[in-house]
Image (spheres, rainbow, N blue to C red):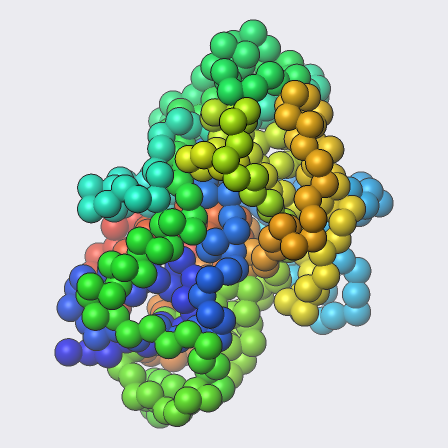
Length: 411
């Protein structure tokens, strides 16, 4: 039985472990954290086939420059002297074009729809994680934003996704949980959502049943490489022999890749969220508040709000209150009856979404190290794409034909 070592215990790593264990591999997972926090836990919980346009798109650079001068804006690149930032920015610029988007859209759509199918398979096992298919409302307050959102909806519809274009009154009829102050919306009926913490708990339980060994609070320090293959992983608790390695370390992927003499261009996109528990008045349908880029997700009796994309570095562990205030302001603008207050710092979660300059995840066998598979760079789509990514990883390692084409997910 081949032994597969997965570095990274977030949702991508654990989904990879699940499908590999199902294939009969002996699987171990290493993670430097206690695996109770991070992007796999604090995200918006959205499963979004609607999100077919990558971050690297025409107009994003111009918009980003405007937002850089607004301390409460949803997108920001933290200026600093960094060769990694300069290289990433140049590659982002090269990808922010129509041709790239046209190639990316069908790839992302197929991957997302496949992932949603796999989530529905999970619900047949156990639905303790509150999976619901209520779709996603893209709400807007201005005609200009509305034009952009409607155009994106038309693109999604051209890929076969079920999309409704709503007037102000139609939004009011659909969203019965609280009053909305918008001029219209686009309803992606293909989307779904769940409670991230509860899904992670379910997934860990499934891995325990499959005898997957998880080493948390364990630091991967180095690798032994022979004949272009990793034979041993050196950790702070000792060495581990291995036949295959999966790199699923999100925003920390570049530093692990360096230990393997490989280069991966990923920068962390810092985001924030906060969750209000046992809330009676709340939106009933997940939404994106388009002008503020704020995600709103009802999770059973709770409600989670999240937003911002601050391109930074993993040592940036301070909470930027202006960014959080921007989220709060957007919520109150769109849902005036909620009267949300600024959360306490201890109630504010932040995490680092791993962003590639192409806006595409990396799901591929490495071209130099023969037994290394990369599964990283999912940005804000980690939860949405995790089951599909895990399944593809198991197919790549098993040398099977992949369920979806992976040409757009190369390094």
